[in-house]
Structure formats: structure tokens, C-alpha cells
Amino acid sequence: MKRSLLQRFLRLFPAGMAHSLHLALLRFAGIFPGKWWLRTTLAPRSQKLEREVFGVHFRNPIGIAAGFDPDGDYLDELAALGFGFVEIGSVMPHIQPGTPRPRLKRIKKQNSFIDNSGYPSRGLEYVLSNIRQRTKHTRNLVIGCNIGKCTSTPKRLTSREYLRVFRNMYQYVDYFTINAACNTSAKQYVPRTREELLELVEPLFEFRRGQLDYRPILLKISPDLTYSEIDTAVDILIETPLDGIVAVAGSTELMPEERGAVCGSLLTERAIEVVSYVAEKSEGNYPIIGTGGMMTPKDIRRMFEAGASLVALNSGIRENGFKLLRNAVKELEMINKVGSTN
Figure 1: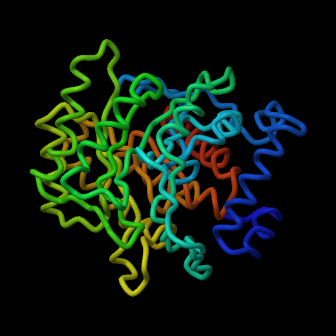
Figure 2: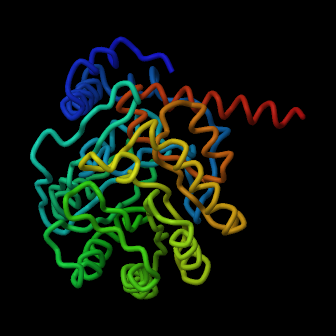
């Protein structure tokens, strides 16, 4: 995918700084000339890709993955750009500074990154203050909340902290992703057994039973799981009130000599492979959000073909800009048009 002049300019800077500059320019564009400019120049205009997934209506099936806007600071701008959903987070109950900078290392020849961020977060109260101020611009934007583990939290208290974020965010977002692949810090948290995973999600199911509104709960898994471990996650999906799977997070096994998780093109094939496997094992009966290595419209199309119900972008936007959404929507529309004429 050919990069714009802006993206080529941003690649002159370290990856973390480039992302901050990109977001600053997005905020500026949302003010001068305004969000109407973002909608008219960059947002896709299709109404043919609307769909309902886990009981929630999406104006299109392509969104922003967790980690891009962790604290929900840019929801108005991302909504104006036409994304179908934004997953904020990982949201932590407390402020978490993350690892020392630089936190993101670009692997230019591989079109990939090493993420060693340690999940920086301004904490639950800050995120709540942003979400409570949802404006008319985000009326049609589905917002998900990714919940992660604080690095300093002992494992025995992890489920309690996930529940705290879940309870406080419940009335303000449209769905939840339980991050079972917290692997961008020195103290990784990747629960793999049935017991560990159920300990995370069962308190959330119990709380949801007492609520008037239903919020879907999804489980985000690591690409480094064995097939047996993926089977465990799929079994939980089928046997419990879990609503779907998010596949996948970054990988710590693709480049084990590096400290952090691999994202970008190096992850593409494994991400599509895992989504295809989950779809096959669950017989296509459960929603899957495909993410990880979605760098081009072709990658996004292949992810849908593998069985994803929705696709979430992160590294692809960082490297190729927001036009990736519009180009991907055009490709999906063209495929739908060809399919309808056959």
C-alpha cells in the first residue's frame, strides 16, 4: 500500500513520537477546519457494510483496536473518520505509567513494531471522565472497553481488579474485551488454563446477570497459545455466556530475542491463522474480532474471509494512515458487489 507524504514524513521519527504527532495532527484537523472536514475527506461513505454483531449495530465492520487510543481521548475524531467502533484501553483501575521511553520500536524492513509499552494508562477515573462526555459526534460509534492487568497487581487480585473496571464502565460502553494476553511489559500476564480464564470471566458474568442492560463480553487471546490452549478458550466460549473472541494480541515468540510484543506485518499470517482456527472450532457460530497485522486492504479482506465478524486496526493505521479505512471499505464493497452479481 502506497504511503502518503504525511506518512513518509512521520516515518522519519521514532515510532512512539510518530504516533503522538499523528494524534496531535488528528486533533488539530478536528478543530481546524473541523470534524466535518474529516468526515468529507477521509471517512468512507458506504452504508452497505452495516451489520449486527453480538446484538450491537455497527455502521461498518472496521474499527480501532485497543492500544491506539487507550484513554479515549480521540473518540470524536475517530468517529468523524468513519470507523465502525473504537476499543479503548487497556483500561486499568489505577494510573499506570508504563515502561520508560522509547516504548515502541519500528522494524522498517518488516513493516512491523516491537511494543514494549507496559500498558500505560491514566486510570479508570480519567477514562470515565472522557466516556461520560460522549458527544453527538460519537452517537453512531460503538465503543468497546478492553480491560487489562496492572503490572503491580498480584495474580491473586487480578480478577477483582478486572471486575472493578467492568462494574464502573458498564453503563458507558457497548461491549467489553477481557485481555488475557497482557504481554508488553516485563511481568507478562497470559492466563492459559481453563481455571485461570474462568477465574477472570465468571465474576463478570455474575455481575451482568443483575443488570437491566446486556453488555457483550469477549476474550482476547495471544497468538502464542498452543492449539490445545486455543481449544480451551473456544470451549469456554461455547460452554459459558462469553459472547466472542478477539484474536490476536502481539506475539512475544516471533522475535524472542526482543523485549516486547511483535505487531505489524510479521504478525499477519499468524493472526489470520488463529482466527480461521477459532472460526472452524466454533463452527462459525460465534463472533470473532480479528486484529493483529492488518496493514493493507488485502490483509483486512483475508481476515474477514478467515471468519472474522469485525476487524480492528492499530499498526496498519500507524504505518499507512487513516486512508487505510477508506481503501479497505472500497475493497469490501467491490467484493460484495461482485458476489451479488454471481
